[in-house]
Image (cartoon, rainbow, N blue to C red; front, side):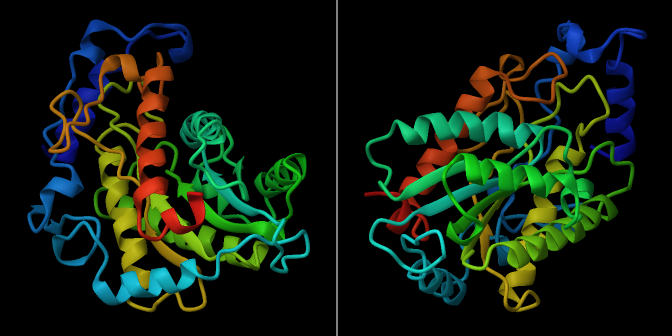
Amino acid sequence: MKRVAVLAVLTALCTGAGTSPASRSLDAASCSRTSVGFTPLTDLGAGKYQGHVGGLYPAGKNAPPNQYAKQGKAYVKLVKPRGADGAPAASGKVVLLSIGMSNTTNEFSAFKKAADADPRKGAAVVVVDGAQGGQDAEHVKDPSGSYWRVVDQRLRAAGATAQQVQVVWLKEAIARPTEEFPADARRLQADLHAIVDVLRGRFANLRLVYTSSRTYAGYATTQLNPEPYAYQSGFAVKWLVQERIDNKLKGRPWLGWGPYLWTDGTKGRSDGLTWTCQDVRSDGTHPSTSGAQKVTDLLLRFFETNATAKPWFVR
């Protein structure tokens, strides 16, 4: 489906003049948009979307190239419990920090509760939600922005320091995008690149950054970040990771995909993940309790099974 057509449909769906999107329920028209017809990147493989190959990694693959995967495992060995000063310590902490926007904190706060209650999580792992509402990529890329002061406050509240932050889950978007693809994804890619640079400067022992793109936004009733932008944000993440694979981000932490969250509504994807109208709040964009739970399940599965995450996350 072409971008112009998608935006035309979205404009028709945005109703309720003079009524706050947050105060009204999703109408039948919004909930009926159960698919946008795009192929999830994980299923697209070597196929193309507007001339760009799918897959999470190069050549349409969903796993990193062997050499890059080995590099990631080498970085894993550097993740170890650290004291407040950052020095290795048997009684130290491994801080897993989220960075992102409102959707990110909705999802990661639910994940934190589940992870903290999971007996499989390592005792040294401290999960801290640094994501914040209203903070899109344009805000977070500013190293002097108020966003980072709140992150510092949350670390202190968790009894942790910046020197103990070793792993980050990064999920961002740009609010109210208007560019044609691929310009919109390239803009987000540049912002994500800038955010990684900020992370590098603030967290001396940061070793691993996992990135994820948006969830399905076909039910959106606002222009905050509707389709096709939610889908296309996957290419921004893919291209950011590609930069690191190509050594264009030398000196940065190892970058890889976290769980891929997008699926084509109720049509779903090959692993069975679907996204229903019940998985979003009244704006059709932010996850409901059931939506946050789906992301929580994907995050838990990732951290407990991924080759670069399991060694430090699981007991």
